[in-house]
Image (tube, rainbow, N blue to C red):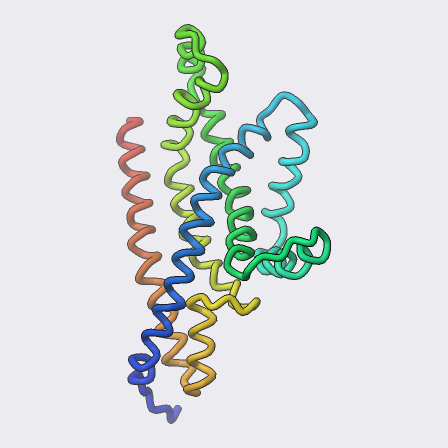
Length: 222
């Protein structure tokens, strides 16, 4: 293969890549905040004893978990405005699509953690006179959040990587800016290698944090 690597193009395009990374991080952080909160609410509704509350959200979880993320993004960008007359800027629409997707995955993590809450703790909440809302706030949520935290962090890393898919709808994230640089410089190998390394440089330390948290939680349980 006769190919001369010229990484100085990446140095010239570095500000554009960093601008795209800023959008990616912003999308990831906001979508994660939405998913961490909404996921717990969905988990509670799925565990409800009332079928009318449980069924729609169980169906929602299955729809988001069993369809490709790319299809969901395209559906939100092109179908939501037509069907519901909701027109949002690309960034809020990307946050909505990815946030709802992640919320459904987080809901499953929360659900398993909620079901693992010891019955004695719930009985103690009743004995202390806590209302159902207070039991959820002071007993269920802290326990479920700690138990589900490693999975929640891993889901957040996955979302950071999947956010590259919003480039297909021209949202100027890291992947979109990388594609622009590769097209303009005719240097796809150098550009996409740099983009991959940026994703890795952020994802790998966070994955190590998730592993450390899981080890600490296992040690605490032991």
